[in-house]
Image 1 (cartoon, one colour):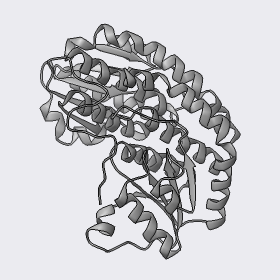
Image 2 (cartoon, one colour):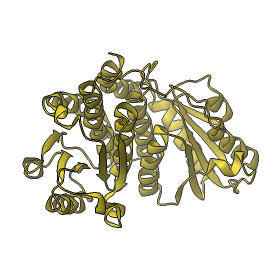
Image 3 (cartoon, rainbow, N blue to C red):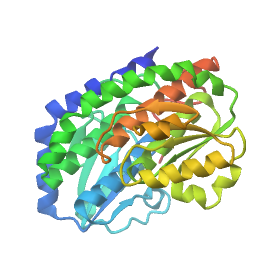
Amino acid sequence: MLLKNEIAQQPDVISRLLDESEAATELVAAAIREFNPVFVCIAARGTSDHAAIYAQYLLGAVLRMPVMLATPSLHTVYGRSPDFSKALVIGISQSGKAEDVRAVLNDARVQGGLTLAITNYDDSALAQSAAYHLPLLAEEEFSVAATKTYTAQLTVIAMLASALADDEEMRSDLMNLPQLARETLDLSEGIADWAGRYRAMDRLSVLGRGFNYATACEISLKVKELTYIASEGYSEADFRHGPIAVVQAGYPVILVAPQGRAFATMRDISNRVKEKGAETLLISDDEDMLGEATGAMRVPSAPEWLSPIIAVMPGQVFAMRQALARGYEVDKPRGLSKVTITE
């Protein structure tokens, strides 16, 4: 089973990036400092768009400047590119074949903006279009549902943020990441014991906040891709503004709630949905909250800014186990292909 193998490869991919990409990341960080962008714009699609959300939070926190997500249709459909002459423009794509993402970087480069591609292939069109490229070093990913390339994208972004911050504590935290990933996957083995209970569910909400809003979106996508159910990822703050109305007795809600600044709000929304009869499936390192959950998915404690890299892994395993319980093909879900070209 390719998907299971690729989920298991994530600690090694992270370790490879930390060992082999430090010099390249420092070079890019130096170029960004010299350029001194006024703002950052990030272009991506699909799973990579969730990596972009993580980057929006992390680079915003480190650089203390506006970080926006691109609107590629302005470039490819309407022919009206924003002014990126003073921007750092980052394109994120597993394959590097996303034509609309490349269009954003091409327009930015023509305007004099600083461009960076994050892809798995040095020879991809996107990598060749950018002034700088940071490779994922994830080797070939055969399963349609992205797993190791997603956490590699997050790791590259985390490395870039720590280089820009020139923060030794952040660098030290990064070096612990491969072991944290291994512990997370070990802890996730027990998900197989209870995930089958939800094989009849036809809808699901996944909630996160702050850095882990990206995690909620990505887990929701993995569940959709592998089980074909109506799964939606939300910021817990947005969930309170209307979508919470869907919760009723037996409704499953995945909560991504590692300890950190966003933890208190996640505990509160957990209590709210439990009052409405929800089944709470919890990804956390807080033992008290885990003990109250319907389904517990433990992760080791980690700095909040790195927690999305490990917190998504139990969600990947849960989605895979759901698909297997339903008898679905996990490596090639119906109607999907590994590379989707949008223009």
